[in-house]
Length: 156
Ligand code: FES
Ligand code: FES
Image (cartoon, rainbow, N blue to C red; front, top):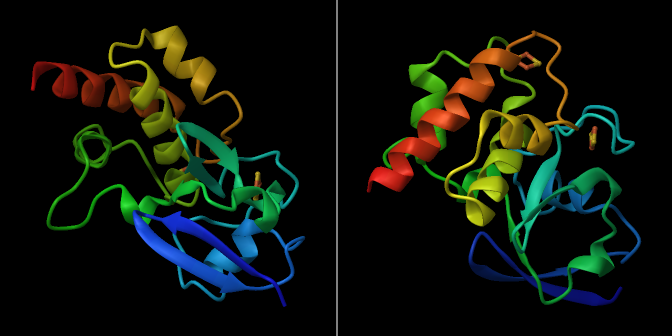
């Protein structure tokens, strides 16, 4: 099996696996990162989103070979219970979730947006989250939470 190296949440990581397997499968299995969720498995729902570089991508539709030497960030690398990311604080403050299944992927799409645009408009947020589905219908509160986090981050 070839060894593929990349940085996972800032840590140099090497995995020996079929390079055509999906990144999501490796993350949730071999690498124990269960934050990215399996939803559709077809790049349709965003539940599995991670950040590669500064872009949110569907890890279910990303072959392992394509992340060689890249920076991969999962929700585990965003913040922790002790030190939450502003987005995580804002989602709690705005109660921007119900079941929470979609939220790791939404957080990663929002975090990628804020990496590129510290002062997004409501339309920017909606466009960035356009491919993230939430079956619970928390969309309005999610948009408010992202704008709240952006305001907090620009005020720092
Ligand atoms: S599980 Fe990857 S986009 Fe739905
Ligand atoms: S909070 Fe349940 S799917 Fe989004």
